[in-house]
Length: 89
Image (cartoon, rainbow, N blue to C red; front, side):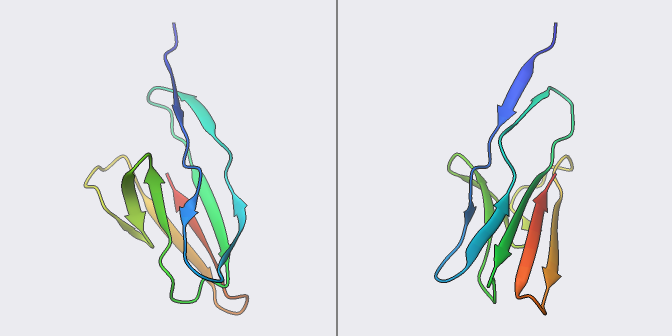
């Protein structure tokens, strides 16, 4: 019997004129399976982008706020386009 977990990171928290142009949908996975969430933000500039689960902030830009080796955060910037993609795994 599989136990399923649902993890929904429904938004990147941003400020001002930045725009979320793409964000991962909710993911349902079996316990122990890897999942990845992506968020692309246009006009990101120097603004901070965070991943949060419920009211717990998991990351700020490319820095994890929890010390759990199961989580990784990646920031891929496109300075010409003024955008960045943030991946939480």
